Image 1: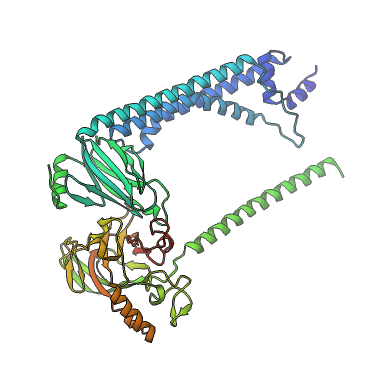
Image 2 (image 1 turned 60 degrees about the vertical axis):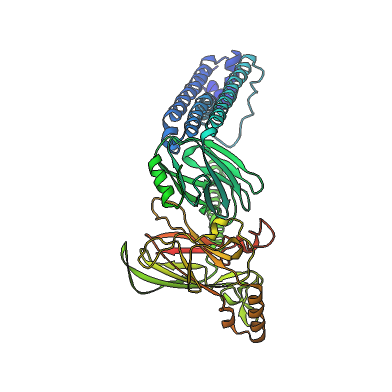
Length: 274
Length: 262
């Protein structure tokens, strides 16, 4: 085969076909295909490392400040999920990138290459690895969810109770033990808190962002949340369910403060401390 | 014609197609943007607070601003709801809806002592959140937080949830560039007898001043820096949908509006 013929043949062979031939080792230009597959997988490994690095570095940077035990768990969950999904996403993106780099140029598209599902080893490995990663993600998620529930049950025995009411488009917070109601959410640090959430009109969703918990506010049913604030500072309280005209304005301030500051705040609001 | 010419023609077509596609995309996005802008525009003219003198407060000497609004059982006396359809007044397309007026977009100055007067003329039922029966965020003559409003000349800190007609509830997004501002003032309802009397007199004469003989509520608050806020009524005065938060409660221009601090 002349060099000219070889180039013509290479020009219409799709990357998928080259990959298939590489796997089946039937290609007369096996070395070319070996190079193709090598580069694609090298790209895949590169992308995987990028995603792993992003998971380790970016989530703690980009996610809201961790201010509760639940938020710490959520951050950890997101990082682990990123690690688990990084190889799948990386390899797919690597093959896609190399395929795009070697795409056909011109008006007449070549015929599709043969599908690779007949290569049992590849299909088996791909399916098996994906399954293992998915099962890992499910197991880790369930374990994390269960640990959050366990902590909530344990905390609820001596929790500060806050009755949260969503009304279009303002939150109000009733502290029954302190005898006060406000539109700002103030909480003492390291004190377990139990939110009883309800709505007076349409469905809302109570989301104190930095605390890492969120639940629906329904009109006819009280939903419950438990968490323990672990860091001093400001928090944002948002509505996370589209609830009408000024849904976007249904936000309010909050703060995690020391117990002494919390007691002072309660007194200033006309309430009574324990 | 040579093959080169054919290739050149194809390239020209491609270029024209690409330019046409981009132009079409820009036109579509522009049309959508223009339509959204038009739909979301203020339904009414802005209502500017007037400045008259200063007030010595704990935050220093602040300009004293005044602004007045009315709350009516129907929009006919509010004055900003479109063509005249009833009693030679502007009732708009929803003549049975309650409404604030003459505008629901208020403009205030930053760092000013604002005194607001609300004339309220409507009946009422029950608040569905008793919290909004409290006066919140208002200040006294010295600028200290008092959580008090004056109702027909009598200072009060709250109304019973069963005595409320509407509320003026001002709030905004908590952002790093905008000072927080939260004001809630419940407004007292008129009795059925009062409403019947007013309605009779009005239907006899179409004298708008009759509708201004409801309760008069006055309160003050202090604005922070520049910012965009919203206000709405927390009394469920809509139709039967969404726990009476449908219809009028879901539109800007009746029981909800904006406050621009500029």
